[in-house]
Length: 165
Image (tube, rainbow, N blue to C red; front, side):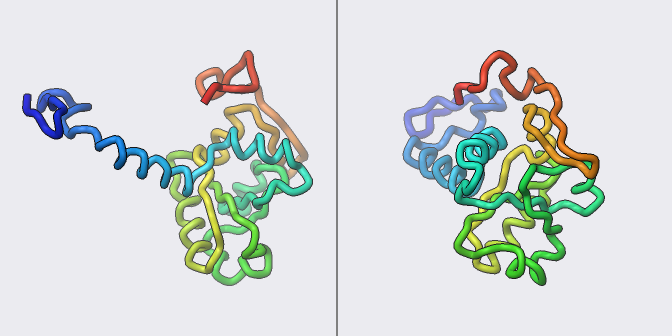
């Protein structure tokens, strides 16, 4: 064990092998993370609370085949590769954009957010993507109409609307 910044670090402990950041550094990092990310529960709550104008637009950056399998109701469909040529026609630069793709194993929403930011849009990425939108039991649209699945008890509270986060 060694001492760094008055924290004892255990080289054999994989969690504490590298000392945690100082509180001020950690606060700055996590504050910045919230500037760049929103989670599906917060997006769904904002869309439900202010259905007419939530103050942002949701953008599905996946392929047309993926869009047809299911998407967030009211989302704009704009595959990442088409952002440079179509974003200005579909999006207003004064309205923040929240991007999503398949889920946490896919960085398509990150690539879409980058492409939009480089074009001058204010943008956040929706963590969890479409996978967690569906797993948390939120309504989605397919080519056949609207649907909803029972919330996955490992990803969403099943006895409350509030996870306590």
